[in-house]
Amino acid sequence: MSQLRIALLLILPTIYSFLVPDGKGDVFPGYVMLESGQRLEGLVVLGTFIESELKVKFIDRGKKKAFTPEEISAYGYEKTVVADLGKKRRRWVHYERMEALEHGRGDGRARRNEEREEEGGDEE
Image (tube, rainbow, N blue to C red; front, side, top):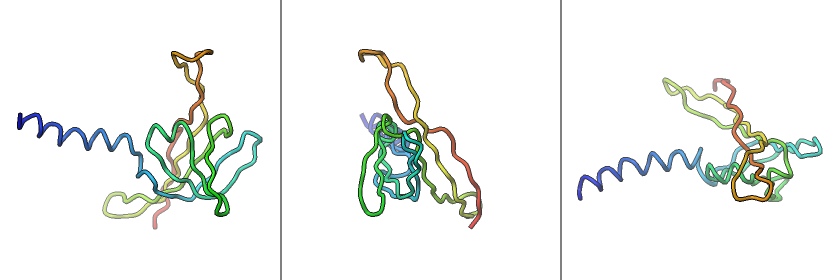
């Protein structure tokens, strides 16, 4: 029984780290690209890995909004990461709307935001 507990203590944090990309509730400067092509600048509030695919919480001029993949074509945020030797780097994380096959839905398709790329590297 103690081996099972030890295994769970080692495995659960690893699984959790994949489900929470940076930190649920963390706020980063970013943007959303509306379906009309208009780009809104503001703050992106992170959710879990799955929440990030299904909606994005956004703060625009103090107003909180939530956008679904049907309403936006992309979004992204800028974060600061600590690289080798303690150097800080700014990185952009971009999500793009994608259509994926999904069983159990009428048309078999679902729209979700999927992480497209991470870029950057400006040292601070």
